[in-house]
Image 1 (tube, rainbow, N blue to C red):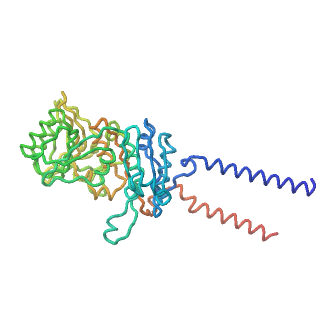
Image 2: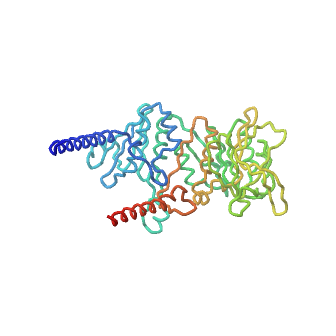
Image 3: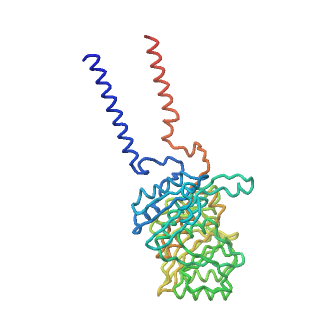
Length: 448
């Protein structure tokens, strides 16, 4: 082959390679975001949860999502998350508007900036989601130092909630009792209820009674027993087919009316707190990891262990006409303990009960630490909030639990206990191999 022919051949190969690269880039640009970009963030910020995927896969109505960005804030993270939804379902249609580029259209959309507008033409419903609800600040840091530090990324939770809201025409109604010493649900729980499109209202039983549209009555951490008037209202409600969810306050004080309510549903309240000598947290036998049931609807999809503190123990009552189903229970090496006594056994700490002849339904968890904010914020991997929401939607057949928890934006430092085994080759083996190859090359060149 002559020198001229060789040069022409090389030029032709180069042109072919360039053409292949250009064609590959064009094809790659047309690929969906889910293929082009892989989520390698520690918290998998852009991976859709099973809840969101199920919502998208069962969509039977078209959804319009309009991103209204501002010149000052055009957040790529929100754009990326919205693109995930559009790539996952052809029912999702996305449009983006930048305020300073098309102010007339922004005014037509309501005049709001830095917001997602999720709408469904078929139902005529629409919900606006501000950027501040999707990227949330550390408010404690903000109020103490004035710094705006991003803490939570809740784009998925807010978008899935909005889709669920605009595609469903009905809203469930629940009530929470409000009494002296009764605890308020944490803000996180209220947010999850809103995400599931569940309307809630607080009531005083002695003043308001139980409204006719009450689909579920929640009693959370009530420190004092019901009085006779309240007890009569509650029993009348459940005997007429009402649903009630009780989260018991951590006390050994005598509560005969509470015990009577549990007895009606086939459960006996034992004396003492549950101590578990097999499944406990850091040398505290009263802080336990209850065993969840894989067969109960409330805990079937739970794959991590919940945590309870100072839980009361329940047992099934003999000869009851109520159908009791357990979703949380101690290990077989446990006891209920008071200052004076100890009774070994296996104890229920979470259950549902359905009375025969439409005589009402109950869910009960025997520790108010179940949804305690400080404990659940300290242990962010706990499934307690998810179990709570599953218990709420258990009574609401037309409502799905679409509450997706926000993901952390805080810097997380690695440590030896959390690093994975497969990281070791990259930390040690790869550098050693590279150094060895370099040494061999250097040695060969030296000999030449």
